[in-house]
Length: 203
Ligand SMILES: N[C@@H](CCC(=O)N[C@@H](CS)C(=O)NCC(=O)O)C(=O)O
Image (cartoon, rainbow, N blue to C red):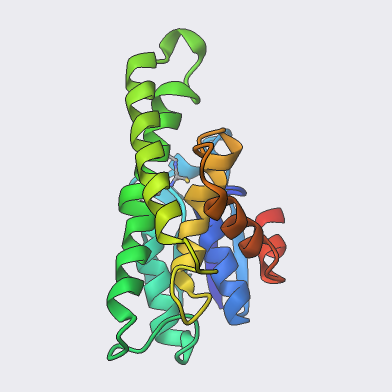
């Protein structure tokens, strides 16, 4: 049985959503950022930094959301939610899959790290403003890439959208979406209409 180490409303929701989209059986081990459960030795043996997501599947244990997504597609996808290796859309798929974490999520995370999570006296407003600017720049680029299309790939919904949704969603919650980003708002609405989406974001 697949086991997902999960914190609600965190990056592990990407994997929960993908598991739901693929119709796989899984169990959830719920962790919390507040109660120290992520930094206990048992969990540090699963993820050396005590972060989520991590996944156990039989003998396999792995962390890093993009890698977990690729692993699940390769092992259980049967060609679903990704273009084939020789498809002309494959390069764009890989680009957005990785961009979602390495470029979008990281700027949003920096904004949270410097401007949201710490108690007021420990915040670093100048660093938060730089992160906000970088998040806006990144989100504007994504908004432009979505012009005239429903999902990141012309062929339709893919795991790259599953990965991308987390950064766009948290950006909207934090008020980071640029004002002139109608494509992004419509994109997020479209993602939320997928039947599996609420199942992943309520747990
Ligand atoms: N690049 C990693 C990031 C993992 C990560 O930072 N996860 C956050 C939750 S969204 C976390 O566990 N934070 C707890 C901490 O930093 O101690 C991935 O995509 O899996």
